[in-house]
Amino acid sequence: MGVLFEPKNYENKPGLLEEFIEKAGGCVVIDGGFATQLEIHGGFINDPLWSALCLIDTPHLISKVHLEYLEAGADIIVSSSYQATIPGFISRGLSLEQAEKILEKSVKLATDARDVFWKSVEKTDDHSYNRALVAASIGSYGAYLADGSEYSGNYGENVDLNKLKDFHRRRLQVLVKAGPDMLAFETIPNKLETQAIVELLEEEHVQIPSWICYSTVDGVNAPSGESFADCLEVINASERIAAVGINCAPPQFVHSLVQKFNELTRKVIVVYPNSGEIWDGIAKKWLPCKCFNDDKFKVLATRWRDSGAKLIGGCCRTTPSTIRGLSKGLKRGSLASN
Image (cartoon, rainbow, N blue to C red; front, side, top):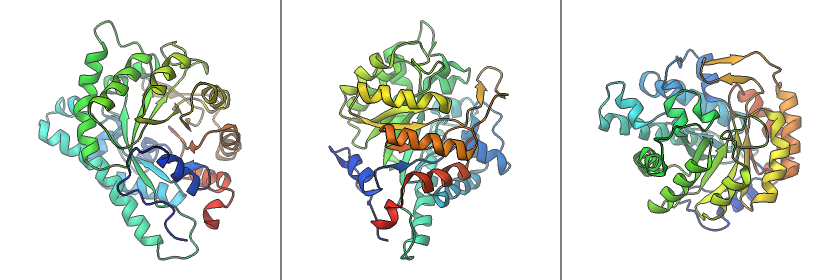
């Protein structure tokens, strides 16, 4: 099998993401939980920097996890920069230059892993892999605060549109310059931060496509309590946002939200929920609850695909095993036939 899509010089032109999806068989598989795998391999993440701490201390583990997801069949791998912020690194005693280099490293680790993996399989005629895209993760302002506010949207009265744009701007510039294929804005909790992202992408003339994903605590609204209709109204006005959806929410919420988003937008729908376990962002621990195993997750993901989701993966507590199941269950053999 040859290259289905060459991400080099990937620009945010009309229809280009749709072309990638079509050539991948109509459904693109995103990777799964990152911190979960880092912990399995001995990475220390019990820290305000979370998995971004491994960018400083154990970057080889990040490369290992990227490769595991590529081997599992992920068409898009997401960089380890979700909680990697310039203020966060500076608060640990790093200089501005050092902080920016670590942000760049998060993208390079992912693109290098992608290129190494692709080189190892492209000589094989009967493989079923796509040459993966790299999405640079950009966590919400609440993720940087590490106080659980990405699940409430309560940033306080002192956080306005300009403050959010200032917070995201330099990180966005550094990550774009590092050369990812896409940007992934994750666990965005409210309309205000949505507006900040949309305006910032326009101001910075970002040419690679972006997606914005929300979490939800009730399966109906954004974490702030605002309606998704209000949030997507902002997104629909932007040509720089290629996809919108849900991440780090319980799987049982996703099907109805895919249906709702299809009514609210013509953007590509992206979903990558967690395993069903509940994260207490204040206590910093997973709460006991019913977890969806890989087989159940795959069954649900088929419903999401059939309801219109085009980018599907997993978030917290999902593993390469989960993604392997998705890759086999969602593709319908389409990759091998191209």
